[in-house]
Length: 121
Image 1 (tube, rainbow, N blue to C red):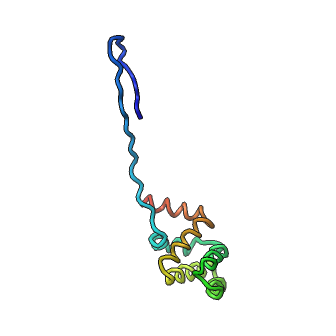
Image 2: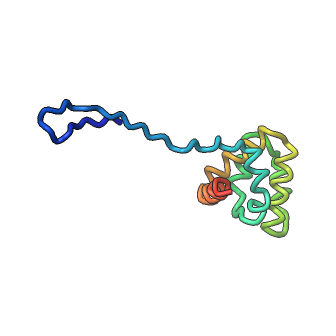
Image 3: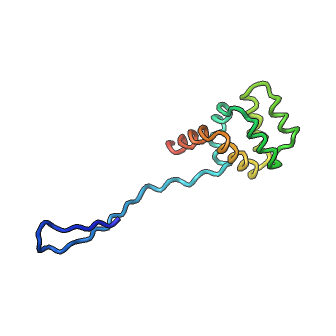
């Protein structure tokens, strides 16, 4: 930002001050794999309705219908969450990225909260 000014004397020439504002560089965003690994326990405990996420994984051909049903048949939410995360991890890097994007779309508040937790550490 450039600021022009002059001293209070009518004979002083005007001057120019160039102000540079630099913010602290934000850390690079985590990859889906790194994010999911870092927040695995929180995701196991906090993920809610998985139907949309499971649909996304099936539409992206990460899961078959049978794998999707396997997750849905788990008796508790935490068990479903753990099963989902474990199965996606076994599918590899691309599957983890698809899950990461799906969670951002389907549960943006949780993902934002977890991202803020990463920044505070």
